Image 1 (spheres, rainbow, N blue to C red):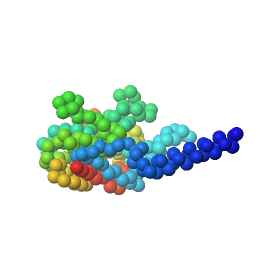
Image 2 (cartoon, rainbow, N blue to C red):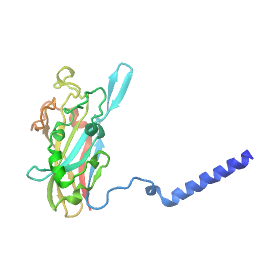
Image 3 (cartoon, rainbow, N blue to C red):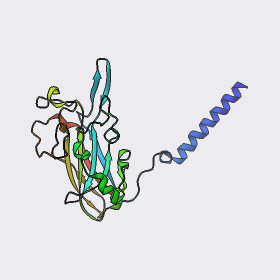
Image 4 (tube, rainbow, N blue to C red):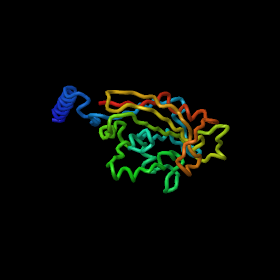
Length: 225
């Protein structure tokens, strides 16, 4: 009797496997945004991963990232993507207010005021594809990207003088055409921000920066229709 039950269970598993092969893997994949959209391509670099913790209690540390769109005159249009820790402020061993020094340029943007008018969404926290592009008029836009990894110390930004961060977040910029067919743009570094996150100003200098520029080996943004 037990043998027959095992045989029946095996036949069910074989049938299910065959059914999934017929449907293909996309049948169970998370649906992606259709229509005009932005996609980020973030290729890890040699400084992408670090380790944090105390004594034997260690945990991996990865970069925090925020990417958003601005008009040519600097008006914030919406966020494409932001890592969950930065958005939800669920840092390990951090105050309830989070860590504004991680992504201060993005954190200090006047997002609430504009989002109330445009109904922009923060789906970027979970999706790299964003439907923000579908709400933009055709034209040239600025895509900004800010990234930082904790414990990224060097001789300029030492552990004693730079807090948890070490080197400050790096701010990147790319120009991309919307509404004129598919386009790809490469991000270029344009500066850093305040070490302690006290403001959202961009410092147009990369002096004293080394491994913070090696968190990613390639940073591009794509516009698709």
